[in-house]
Amino acid sequence: MHPASRCSLRPTVSLSLLLGLLTAGCGDAPPTAADARELTLLAASGNNQHGMTGTALTEPLSVQVTILGRPAPGVIVDWQTTYGSIIGNGPTDAEGIARATWTLPLSLIGTKRASASVAGRLDAKVTFEVKASHPVVEVLGGNLQQGVVGQPLASELRARVTWQGAPVVGIPVDWDTESVAADSPVTDASGLVRATWRLSVVAGQQMTRLSLKAYGWGGPRVDFFATARPGPPVALVWDPLNAWGGTAPVYPRGTEGDVALTSRVTDIHGNLVPGAPVTWSLLTRQGEPINSGILLADHLGISRGGLPIDASRSADDFVASASVMGTQLDPIAFTVVDFLAAESGWGDYWVKASATVRAGDTVRWASRSGSDHFVALATIDPDNSIRALAPLGRLSAEPGKILRHTFLEPGDYLLVCSDHPYVENLMHLTVLP
Image (cartoon, rainbow, N blue to C red; front, side):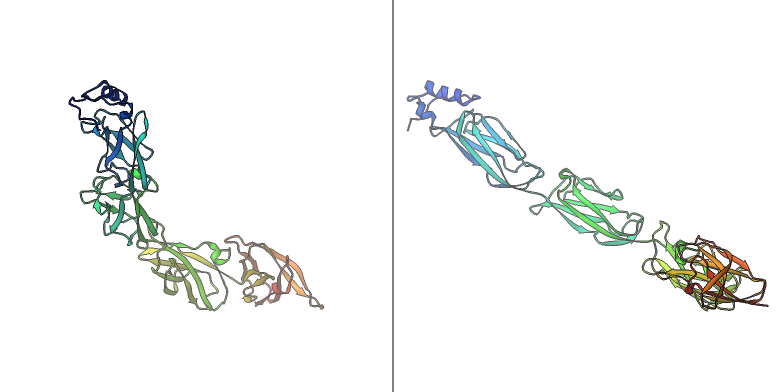
């Protein structure tokens, strides 16, 4: 061992200058070139820490440089890492200690490494390892609520941000839904976040996400869910006309049974309202009541069903109307027809294939199929073939299209769709005096 030096060394900015001073002599036994190889770089503190991503480690990293067993002040130490950033705090001090602050990256978790080395000495290098982990966001309250569309939920949304069980204070947070109003853009002294959520106007399940702003997509986050119920029923909308097979609402004359009624019940935002009580009424064209009843909207928000109508009344056109919670549906008129055409895989058929009218009455046809028909008078020849005689008119499936013809002479008539003269298209009409 060399005797201790009696002189002090002034800090310098490089190892070569330090070695130069040492070899120039400072004491009774100046170091030799072999002594220079006695430089030692050791980790002093800060290794094997556990840090939170995006923040500086609690304890700085530090190394000690010694030469010939003695502290080497003024030595420049290079700090390097590919994970985050590391900044050295200057050359070694009087004890040969150099320190650095390591800020961990936001996006990477797991074991990360940094190194310290002395310039010009590739063999003088130490490695530090730390474990990086994200803060944790947990839901404390306000999840899985139910509320009315367009209204704030009854309970506030509450979440907490912690790391290793300790609250993370002042970290910026972000909500992905504009209708969420947070009490503060950052966590409070307890790591808490509070917010009020006003639901959108669309009924059904809704979601909003809380995330830590600095971490971006894929960082720590939690989701809140809510079920938005429709508001009170304020409107009734008739189902599309295809509810009646593509034509205007029609009803075969003299049919005993229910009149099919269908409408959608909606709130002010157009959401369907299940379970709403809809009062239906059947009226004559003159406004006299025929029948009425209540049909609850089903789980889809559609009020559908039938109201009986007296067969003796069905000879005249009538009106159907409905109301819900004081809101009146625009009435819709039903046209009573004598023959109603439909279509199957085997061709056309008639929902009601016979009718009796008085001379001078107007006979009416309507179509529920998707193609045109041409109605004609017909006879049955001796060989039982059907022969169309005189065309009566074109029957179209257009909404509101009704074919009309007035029979003045009493008698029994045969009618066919002259474009498809098949047996299933045969109609019987009796015209009384």
